Amino acid sequence: MIETRDLTKMYGDFYAVNRLNMTLNKGDVYGFIGPNGAGKTTTMRMLATLLNPSYGEATVCGYSIYTGAQDIRRLIGYMPDFFGVYDDMKVIEYLEFFAAAYRIKGPQRRKICEDVLELVDLTYKRDALVTSLSRGMTQRLGLARVLLHDPQVLLLDEPASGLDPRARIEIRGLLKELRSMGKTILVSSHILPELADICNKIGIIERGELMVDGLVADVMKQVRENVVLQISTGDRDNEAAELLAKQDNISNVEVKVDHLVVRIDDPETDYSFIPTLLLENGFRLRLFREEEISLEDAFMALTKGLTS
Ligand SMILES: Nc1ncnc2c1ncn2[C@@H]1O[C@H](COP(=O)(O)OP(=O)(O)OP(=O)(O)O)[C@@H](O)[C@H]1O
Image 1: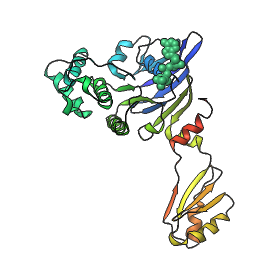
Image 2: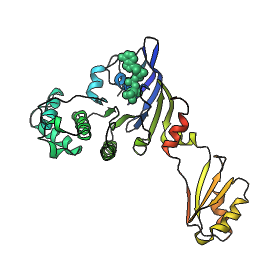
Image 3: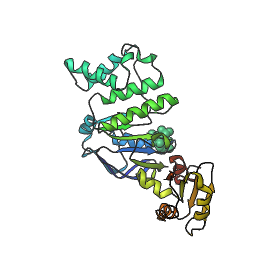
Image 4: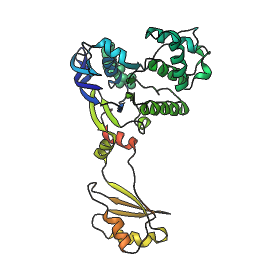
């Protein structure tokens, strides 16, 4: 649904976006992560056909951004990081105004507006003035606006920025809902964990260059330096610790209150021998799981030194 090839934007001799290659297939939710000034907005604006690249190519829904701007605009919903709302307009009027711009006519217009309001949970504000909405509500209204024409591809530039924790959670919930509707979504943020449980793909952009790009699970593997397992054998953890500490490929065993923390330095090690070993030695297994690497740690590892 989105494909870029060496997409580049220069301002003078400064590369705002440098040879960007990314692919989003139908239904992908791609978390586009990078610090301020990394090139996220510039990329989104090029994909939305609002900014001409210096060179490179990009297609959206099969149309080139150079020759298919009209078709692309019909098929995407682009929510910029900052957008104005008109004074003296009620929420429902605001949506009807944009629905009219999308040439949605007649009784269908009102119904679609009511439907998207419901989707973003703003029905109770339908007659409020847009200027009276909180920032979180305004963001949700912005999302409602880009959903009016039922686009298949959404480009969402920092939809959760500047929101309090509750409003962020609401936006996340909304993105999950859009994902389950099968939309293809490119969503940017400068905070990786914010997008953790929503995306199946992530890209990390730094100073215009895509440093990391791929499936969330693969990216996580890339940054894994060792394996940490949590194991419990019930009331025999001390004995189990002694046995495990003797194994060659286990680097360290720590006894915690109700479980063991077992570290294996080589992340390629097949650790399935551990449950077998414990069971063969008469232990019961109450808990056996790998500690997940947090996205925050991954982000720090992947961008080490790049932002300084
Ligand atoms: N019109 C312009 N003229 C010159 N430089 C620009 C212009 N627009 C953007 N830039 C520069 O390009 C770089 C990328 O900007 P961009 O807005 O894409 O970053 P971003 O990742 O979206 O950042 P943020 O998280 O702050 O929105 C920045 O260094 C910015 O200063």
